[in-house]
Image (tube, rainbow, N blue to C red; front, top):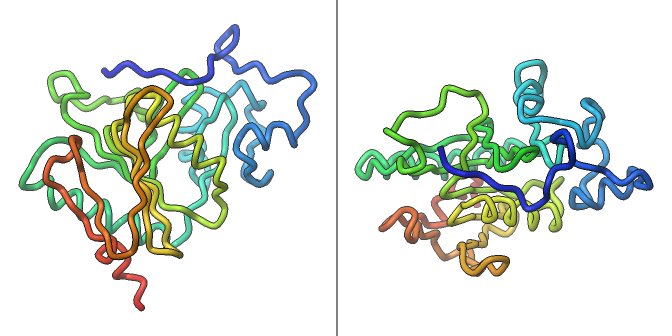
Length: 230
């Protein structure tokens, strides 16, 4: 299994030590300024574990990620789901001819640190991440994606997305695509020097490239957004 790491260390007993002086506003800012109604209060913020993120899927509606021991609801509407499916379909079709790894959807939870679990809208993991090409039997995989794809929703904040990119690259991802349906554009973040990823802005007439992660793979943004109509 690939080694995982988190940019923020957990405290004693495996919990993230929220400062005693923090307010709900401080917690919101720490999580990227997200709306309070996306923050779950159980388990107690700062004490959540990877299994808690999985249990939210098993016990009720809504997907949750775990950020520094805090359960945070993912936001993804129908349009965002449509775009994510187009990306996943293109990747899966390409992989039929180039069997380099596996593709997961938004409910494919990946543990990136002791109290950090992300569910990219689409993710690709090369077979090299899995010894003997055996997929994990755990419900939450303790492995970083080679490619993480996030489709922006109205409820996402810039700070939240910056943190997501940092989490993915910090855990060992090599490529992150952030796709913006309203503008039909995207930003590609490629792993580079530590703390200095190189973003590339792709306009509506451009295309995504797989780089070293998916050599030869390209996907026109016009193809991704074809389901939106004109």
